[in-house]
Length: 137
Image 1 (cartoon, helix red, strand yellow):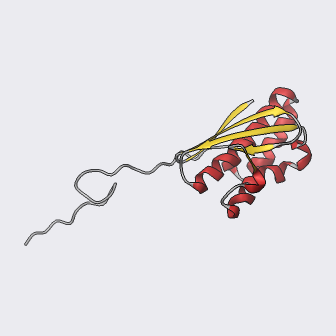
Image 2 (cartoon, one colour):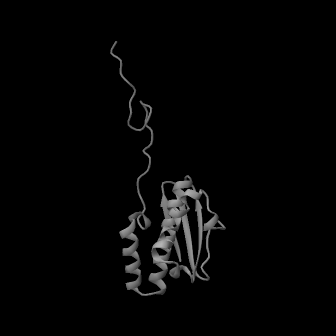
Image 3 (cartoon, one colour):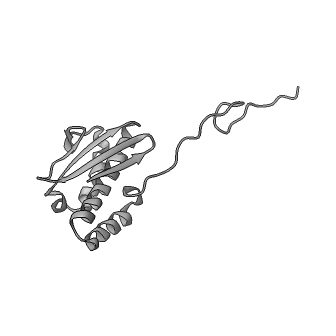
C-alpha cells in the first residue's frame, strides 16, 4: 500500500506492508531521525492510534525535497494516510472510519495536505507584492 505526504516542497512516500512493526525513514529507524526536536511530531500518528496497530505493519518511508521541518510533516502525513489505506484494504470500513475520525479530531493536517505555496516574485519590486517606492521630486 503506497501513500503520499506533502508539505511545501517535501514529498514523502510511505510503503505499508504486513510485517513485524519496523518503521524506517530513508533506511533509518524513527528513533534516530534528525532533527531530534521534531521526532515527537513524527511519532504522533503512532501514539494516537496505539502501538498495537503498528505491531504487524512494516512501514518504509522515502522522503525528499523541502527543509527538515517540512520533511517531518510530510513523513507523519504519509504514515497516517498509509495506515488508513491499509485498514481500508485489509480490514473493514468501520475500522477505517474510526481511525480517520480519531486523526482528524486531533489534527487535520495528518490527512489533508496544505496547498499553500510561496508566491513568485514579480518585476517592479523586491518581492511578490511589494513595489518600489515612487519619487515625485
